[in-house]
Length: 243
Image (cartoon, rainbow, N blue to C red; front, side, top):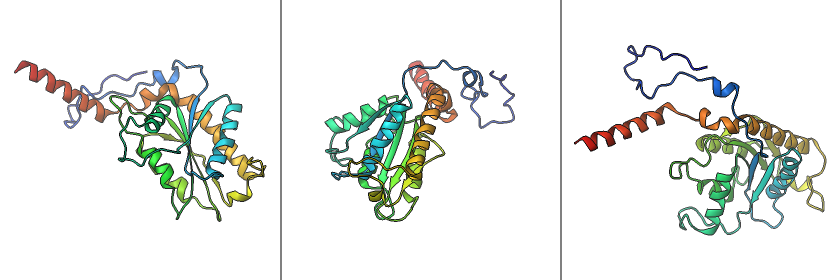
């Protein structure tokens, strides 16, 4: 339940009209949607046999089995950021998919100790703000990487930083697949292994977190600083009309 408004006279930096005590009622009994969680999967390679794409395809199969609705975005033909208008067909497709989604999976190869430009370009095309809507804010995120060599966590660590920057709820678990060329059979299916099991763990956790948070996202991401800005804009408009 929402607490009574405290005495703020000793806190002159706070804007009373924008400050709200924590309301726990929406957290305790939110109105739950019943449709399958909508998960967008992005991969970071354009190779014909892309192991980040193959890992995402395996993840999509698991997501479907868990009752989610996955959608894999094909980055082929997506222009580099700032080289095309936002109404470019591939950009529009990506942004529409981002708005449709309630959670995401970002899976990139590790190249030179980092994520690929292919994956980064997809994220860069997603604006923090589109009109009055933040397309990624409050959505869940799972991060995965594939490597040609030994085990590494450089890329998933960087993806976590990006997820935080995009105001997403990145789940605790993650998947890193070393020597990925050994983990897929001739039919491009992932072989049974502890690495496969970890990927299933990640998808299972992503679906649970998406069910848990998607209906609470507006409440969880409601920010004092943005309410202050809105209050200031409203005040400016009112004062302008009065002058």
